[in-house]
Image 1 (cartoon, rainbow, N blue to C red):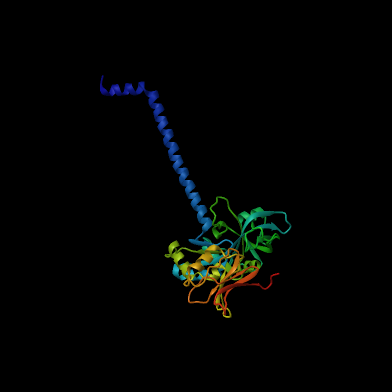
Image 2 (spheres, helix red, strand yellow):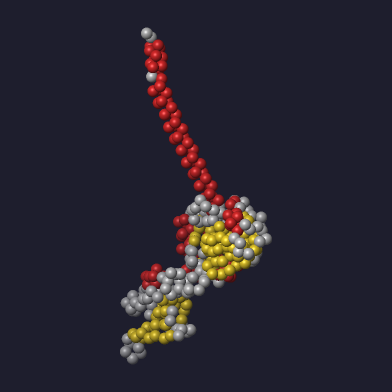
Length: 345
């Protein structure tokens, strides 16, 4: 018996076991190859969805209920060598004029013509007019709306106080916008724009930025800043220029000089001065031994002595009264006085 005959008879005798092993290897290979193909397909689909959601947005600054100067966007164009756009991002609801259809959790975006620079396909229109509205395909399908229809948007106004606070107003803090639908933007035209990662298309409604600023009573302000791709459009460079160009007005703060009292007053349009703000003021103190620290978490402004740099506050203005530290001419000591603020009972 030759070696060749032995091999052939062995294969014929063990054919069933060899066939099972071969089929198992083939099925296992098919499963692994299929999983790799599906995984690559899912990865590609998620990438396409992310690109459709962000467009050409490289960097984004979202401050939610805090509004900074809209002109802050211009200060990033030259340093980052890219284009920028300010916007307002709010949450609201949308309904048809006859209230036959409604959509909740609508992302209402106040934009101007600069926002559309981030789209892969430029929309066939420029800036939106004051009474114009553009919606994405998902919202148009939900409302069954077409260009020319009237859509009612209801947007929550930004609050200076948390809605959960016990002293928060109980009345409805929202505004209504009755707008005419101008066009339906596609996903390639930033219709799917969102900073939240989700596989579901958001309900987006685009309004003229000046219109939303006026109705929300935040003229010249925005709570969203977008920057496109560029050589310097990286987070650490953008953060450095943000620190350089950030002003007190961007944090809703104002520094006033009170010549009659020889003090500087730090005020905020919000109800409270947050602890980081007061701590930053205290850290700038250059005369720690001259004044005793007066602090409060429920104050709308802090007044400090007029010096070359910050000093610890010797006056504190709250929502209802003003407390001031004054020096006695007779004893030379310090005393605290209080007076009612204008407009309080």
